[in-house]
Length: 432
Image (cartoon, rainbow, N blue to C red; front, side):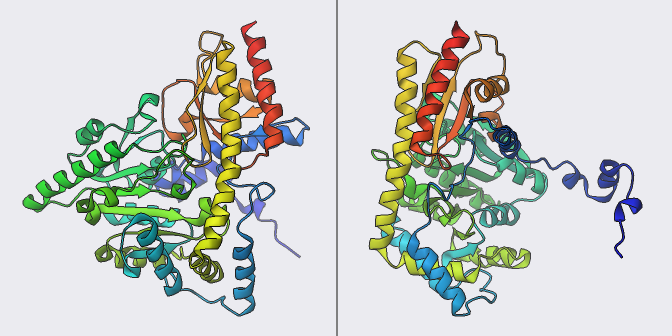
């Protein structure tokens, strides 16, 4: 016999939830991207042909993790490498990550500057917890992935600073300088999710120098520094003709203040394997290790061991990355070329050339054709063209500017042909 607990639960579940949880958790919001993805799945279940360009993930049908990685994971499981790993990562992986940063970025942090977690999120959240307290001033630049949720959890006074397409949706040096006074945590990301753009070298140099100058003033006054989360989870997926830059490589004096965030989630298409890390000044590593250990956010040992092995095989890794970048860029370039062709025909669309990551910034300007919001345009594209995209509002940019994220991680080249043709036809119908 089993007990049906529904008879014992409050009739008003939402009211009961608000009484039970803290105000911060009661007001926690879900992902807008996942809400759109659920709508897409519903339409697909109804038999609609939908090209899903919303997912910031890799479909295994299109993009596989390295075969050698899969084989090594299975090997380490069979060997019994299934117990708890050290809270900050197995020594083999920490050493391999340290060497990767030394060899490819010219940064020697040593293994003692590496803290492994279950993907990129634990190091990000750990940094928020390490450096902020309720009421502290924190800053990010829009559009950018998910920062608002962390600010909500940590109860900081967060400032969202809008950027523009003219600057590839990155802040100017002047914008950063204007925000530094009193700020405890600065958040940037390049290549950028959602735009697929990379930050300009001179801009990054200017930001790094501004952070150093601000912190020298604070040190003289005995004040805590502004810390900088530099999220570079897409750095090995930079498009041909673009270059990824690192602030510490360019301005070594900013090293005490930069927390690098990275993971195999994107550049090994291994989002579900949950191996990520922070690379940070060794004097801070123990505190990040402690936080990740207390919340149990370590990566599985077999995946750590396999990742360490593959990072020690530069030939195999480079061959895989070359193939992955080729597949991604083929999709991004196909979309970009089609959008430019539509634009040349007089249709109200535009895009920014692919620079990195798995994203393309698409502009659909239908505000003089019966629409007043990005959400209305997004819903119309889904219904009329079977093309699912994410408005930049999902990345905290409030303006209805017609900009959307297109992600190619879950689509094939042949699928894109039909989707782009449908979008072209829908736009023509709309314009009459």
